[in-house]
Image (cartoon, rainbow, N blue to C red; front, side, top):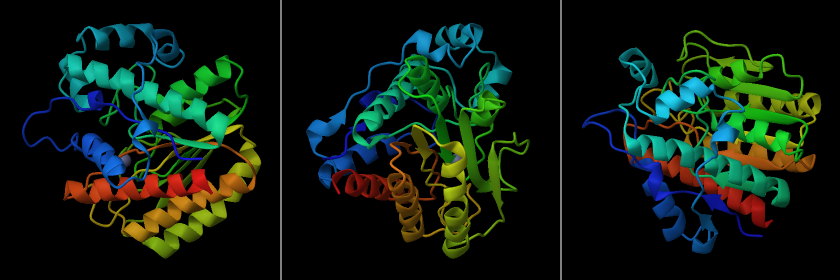
Length: 302
Ligand SMILES: [Zn+2]
């Protein structure tokens, strides 16, 4: 079966000139996925906005209301890293909707992908590090609420630690949070997940993949999840401005295949989100994400 992905023209929002968040990557990625026929155009779906009740399974009503109304204060916006706009609100609700839809579809078909999401620095009562809402946590809590799953695992291979996700699921025996990230990178105050693997600056393909190969079976055995949500960050790439690691494009693609293969071996569906990516050239970031889509597409159709 062909891969289904979720992506919206509304994933883009205005940023001041020179802002380091590569907001253009969402449109570029969608265009490339269609132009290179990785996914048939009719399987590129526009997500609905996530519902307020779904978001409230993770986020406080106060934070939701103040964000929606543009009432966050200057310190909160600084921590988030974005100026507020109506378009940012729209994007944030749609991006969570994309991860929810991809997770639902993965449960039905084995794999699906949101061409956004993985905003793992968002906490219940605030956003930080370019993350407004924790899409992964909302999708897991919602599907669990609907009794579509009982146990879940988050495999977070963005180069930054998923501190928000870890805080949200701390003490929850039914959600296993696994993160492999730069030990000396942001966030500088880390929140322990179920399993954290810290990487030294400059870690390259072979060492990275060996550590992942060792961790994955342990994660899947201990978690025994009904669903894996995978954050396939592009920022471990060697030319990423913020990553401090040295993975090649091939190394990242082998990483993605390793995760999807490990899950398939034990029959666990996977919802993929793209996570971060801050290449010196935005083309590099888009290319890395595109390779992830290719791996997922091959996985869906084989
Ligand atoms: Zn990141």
